[in-house]
Every structure is written in structure tokens, then in C-alpha cells.
Image (cartoon, rainbow, N blue to C red):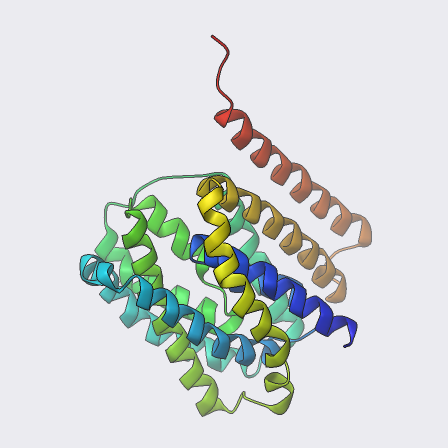
Length: 281
């Protein structure tokens, strides 16, 4: 195995474990690391095929809660179809380095917002559903990432645990199906992409049940915060790399940006653990 294959196998195992524990996180952890070795045009088709199965599984095990959330998520599905069409077309002609930049640039603040534990319910939920779905579809088709913004929205809107997982299952299964079809029509599937599957699938088969088991022995919110902290570091590092690759920043600037991410990430994690420490009597 080459080093890129070893890294891909390792990061997909970690990402699948997180996904099995909290219901999302596979792409948002896999993609930032894998993009250091592969372009989106090679990586995305393989991940979308894998996520078809993962998201379908999540939807199946939470199917009993689908009727509770269907009316709330249906308008988002309409926007998804539009966004996936636009995003797949964009991916077909935009330079891979710029796609990496967009991936890291949009993902980093979303992860930090989750790490900060921000909760601010949106009252006009139905009004924002269509544009939100379009944005999610565009983001997913370009990056295969949608978990952080979806989790941010559903946590803010006060979904119960099973409803949260069911809503994620419905939307993420739909976006996987739409994107898989769009990639097929555009002709993205290649031997280079399919060759990645043997290095991704074993980690998924082990990681999903492992995460489901581990979360029974850990506090879910603590597990989620630690996962987001790790993800933020990876994305911050990837952003500094691509800034240098595109000559958008000097080495000093990129090191400064990464240092800020490290400090902010550490502060958010420390604040979380301190808030959970019981005050002395």
C-alpha cells in the first residue's frame, strides 16, 4: 500500500467510527484529510457511492421517526435537487485547487460554530428550507460534505434525538442519490475513483458498528465536541496548505492562520470541559 492509501484507510476508519456514534461526520472528517492526496473529482465519486450505503443504513434504522420529520424536511429536498445540479456542473470545470479552497473555507467556520455549541432557533423554518436545501445540495455535490450545516440547523431547531437522526437520514440519503445520478450523467466515475473503494469500505464496515458500541460508554456531547475539535485542526491545516498552493498567502500568513485555529479550537474545547465541571460547594 502507498502512503496515500494507508492514510485514506485510517481516516475513513476514524470517520466511520464518528458517524456510527453521532449519526454524521463521515465526509466532514474524511474529505479534509483525503484532499491532501486526491482531487475532488477523484475522491467524490468514491465517497458518494459509499455514503449511499451509510446514509441508507442510517435512514433504515431510524425509519420509525421519519413520519415525525417528513413535513419539516420535504421543502429542503426540493432545494437539494437544484443545488446538486448546479454543484455537479461547477465541479466539472473548476480547477481542483480552488474546489479544495472552497471546501476548507466554508467547512472551518461551520465546524467551529458546532464546537462553540451555538443554539439559536430560526423561527421562519419553512421560509429558509428551500434556499437552505439548495445550498446544502451545492455544497454536497462539490465537496460531499453536508453534516456540519445540517447538524447546526437541526440542533438549533430543537429536534429530538431520534427525529434528529431520521431527518439527517432522509436528507443525506436524498443528496447521495441525487449526486450519484448527477455524477453518472456527467461522467465522473472512473477507474481511478473506483480503485479507492477497497481502501474505504473496510474502515466503514468496522467503524460504523464500533462507533455505535463506543457511544454507549461515552457522553454523546463530549464525543461530538472532541470529534469536532479534531476536525477543525485537520481543516485548518488543509486550508493553510491550499492557500500556499494557490499563492493566496505568504508562509507567515498561513502559519498565523493555523495558529489562530489552534488557539480558538483549544479555547472552545477548554470552555466546554470547564462548563461541565461541577462547581465546588
